[in-house]
Length: 153
Image (cartoon, rainbow, N blue to C red; front, side):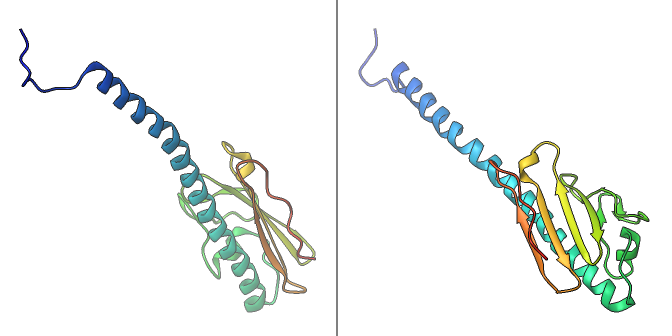
């Protein structure tokens, strides 16, 4: 019935290929997702670094401390999906891309910038800038532990 010159895959070969492909996919997809999360976190950290610089530049340029996102726009815009943040306070805004919500608090000359993510709370970012001594820092959380408060005192 069948001749020796027929070509094709046996059932075992096909099943083995599916198992190998499934194993590779099980490894690759979590690594890919982790890479995407790190990229989004690094993008937010870069924006936070810009916010730190903008706070210092505003204080240098105008001689007073900024009190709102609108104040920071006088020096450099902080972008959201809807354009520059123009709130008259430092309450949470959602950064461009929609992954991180950022708020700023000020105690004397110490600004603390906090970025959080609802779907991945441990991938938070906490930064500070002290306009009295010039210290600044950024701490990022990981997939296993949230960021700790940096020391800018």
